[in-house]
Length: 136
Image: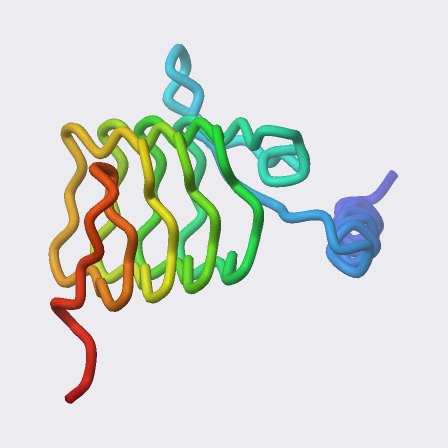
């Protein structure tokens, strides 16, 4: 098969997967240091997204409780109104992430990077509510 045909087939497959509502993510292999494409991260229950590359994903309102996001790149992700109860976010990069009205009850945030993350009416892991970034 010619290279141009292979690229067209891959693009068609990716378009079909994307139109089906399945989330795509990139995950780094811990052994080879390469990047691979997967399609089952968010759709599994609970989500299994350890080391996933989900930058700029819109996960607003999603049911993600108990999910594993260990070491994931979650920069600029929209978690507005998402349920992240008991999720594991250990070592994840949460910079510029929107947690407005999200539920983080019992979530593991140890070792996370959270520069400029937005917390407004956010239920924190200890059950307290964070209003830090709410507009007046």
